[in-house]
Length: 234
View 1 (cartoon, rainbow, N blue to C red):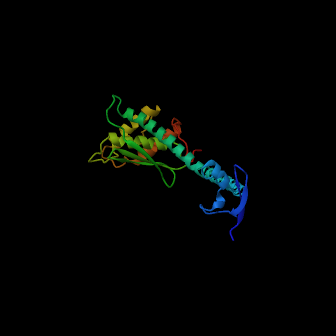
View 2 (cartoon, one colour; view 1 turned 45 degrees about the vertical axis):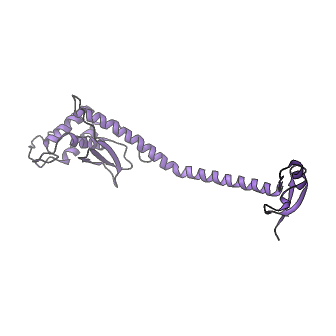
């Protein structure tokens, strides 16, 4: 037998016992005297069921609220990281604009290469210039900038300016002379090349060792203080 609950008319307060889920055509759902007076069907309500529904609705709302709060807490580190990455990207773009202008003291209509930043698996910084007009910079998650990062950015932008030599490749003397000029102009520091002044255009000694030399001198001079937030937004 179905559970019986008391159903009451909200108008005359007359009540009777009926199943908790009566059919729609069950006459016990309706107060017939009040329906006859009004001309439309007057449904009875079950106070016990209404109270139960209110408790259930409140419980569901509290569960949903707690779930939203847990989700916000779990997403907080992700949001902080995305915010830090957006700030870092903006700082990179601004620094790239400064360096790009120094390559063209008289001005240029050339569009600066687009900068993309990804994380590397270790420490340090590296970059790639694509002839499609894009630059990829790899930084560590704990990086906040420094001489190695900004020298790498200037290095990759220099590839967009200085064409690759069919004889000396992409890292010949012409490339590093231009990079040196821009670095000195940007950070107002004099690069000491006394150890490589004897190199010739065809020497294979030109290469990343020159980058390391300039990074070390920039680091020692302490002129590169332009920083960005860590990956975690710390």
